[in-house]
Length: 422
Image (cartoon, rainbow, N blue to C red; front, side, top):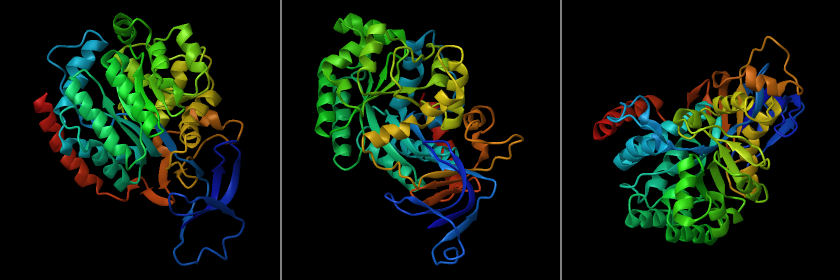
């Protein structure tokens, strides 16, 4: 067990800050308890004492939408033909990259993502994977890497008809096999690349395992245009008619190009939306607004990076220009993914997942101004220690469960091979 001495504990629900000694139990079902005096317990065998004087301690982050498979893309050469729109960005960059992935590349991408997530304070990642020519067993490879680093997860394979029905069927089979032994979601790329038969099979699979769909939704106007052209309705109307919105475990990523009617459908459903504003800016597809929606809005990084504080801060500053926004609203979205996991009874978001900030602020920190510190002060560089399931996975900003140097060396070699294939 861990004993955090003199911690400034932030209650994640009330934001109340209190000076506490925190006893952290190990294990997926472990919790935390507050100790008034530590003299009787600090010398007990098996307890590691950590001095947290003048440090902030709170629940760790959950990344609501990630793409670990993109980890080896950082700094890769530009495509020979520069994309003129979002469709070309997919065709010339991301759909070329995912088809070039091997199992070793997937494994190293997962390790790199898990390490980066841990060091940036996330102990749970909801990931959306694609590797059309390396489908079978890919989710287990990612899961094993995440497990080794100490990151809990909710994975899915991105099922799509874009590479042919045979590969779509492989994606369905991979999902079925994975969900027999692991918690996860049923992944779909987007409405415009998923035919009716594949969509219905995916919904049936989600119902079979009592889970949700994880799908890109109206990220670009092309999704709406081709869905209307091919199926005679909007994206969200199609999803509603096919049962995608029936489960509160369903995650719709992006949700930029929505009509008022679609927003009403989503507001009246129990599904969650994952906002990814930096990716939207990078792809020049527009910006997210919560107009007409409920409060089931979470934050993801969409493969851009693994820093949830950075993504949340970006969503805050962009939101100031496009929707009702405040530090409090932004902080609610940052923590909403934890609510999503709890509502749907997914495991891994336990009370003993904590992060410890080393934050020497020039101004007072209180319950009232804490959201302001999250958006005008704190960065991931302030994260000193990270605890997952009651166990330290990052200590003094270094990951503990894997050899980061060896992993990054191997990753760089595979990245060069990947880039040559592109």
